[in-house]
Image: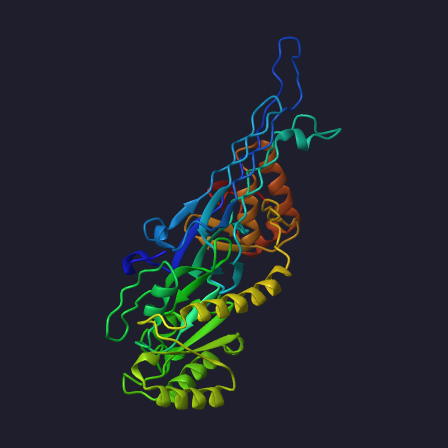
Length: 435
């Protein structure tokens, strides 16, 4: 796998909107020999959900550069003869494995899609409204009232891709990471003798034999204060978090004029500053460019490095392919141990939630504003009632006005100075006030 810079997108914002529920129907039986048929208005269908799915076939968020708005299908309205409307189809959006999903407004992490085919619902569809068959009682036999469907949820999401690789090559620019991944795997990164040649993480599959392999990532060069955004900054540090094993590459020859011990310490400090958990990941220390040193000097430097790091150092030459197979085997064995721990973690099962149904209170407070046209009734609960019932329906209007009266409508209007004949506005509907 090799990505060009312009093809690699690892952070985007998208808008998602679930489908609205369909409206319930007001309908009565109309049959030849049934002159007074009862109510038979069906329910509205539920709105479609918006679901994100981790697709292992994707490697970047590039597609979201060109489409950023995703809207699921609305539920259909109910019909006569007790026919319910069809529910809207769910909208499933594929993202790469390793995508972190956040709510832009709250900053809440909604999901970490770090396993193939994991799914998460990011916007619930609205519940369909009930038809008038649900409002029949022993004394209320011909109800002209039905519910509107609830609106589906909507939100802005931030998608952040953290590469999924078994092992990640880390180290200063020009220590030979790109050369190593090119000789160890099928990756063909751009290689040149200047800092920051690698501008995007490269992934390569390292074959051990016909049945065994692992994925290696070449993480762009880190420098001092990378955790604070210096150089290529912490844009790439987040990709290392996914790796099971860190392969710390050091230029043992000092060909760039740097101290290899100091380089090692700087990288360790940057990992620790970014995340304590990151600094505790298993590390394999690799001393590259051994072909540039005499045997005696090489042995001396390797001894100093092993003593300083308190662990075994693997000397290699990417250029001459010295000890490459030994390094591949060591990484494979270390990755295998880490994978065994991962396999013990249960894979979460996706459970689709229920459609959203906003609760409407029958006892609530509201505000009355005096305007040039009369008096305006407003408030959060007023808006909820208007979104649930159509005041064009006779019984819905009577029920709503009765509820307002029980919450002190007339008394509050009189306190505001309302007189007989004044106009009272509720949403787009107007009424004449009578004491």
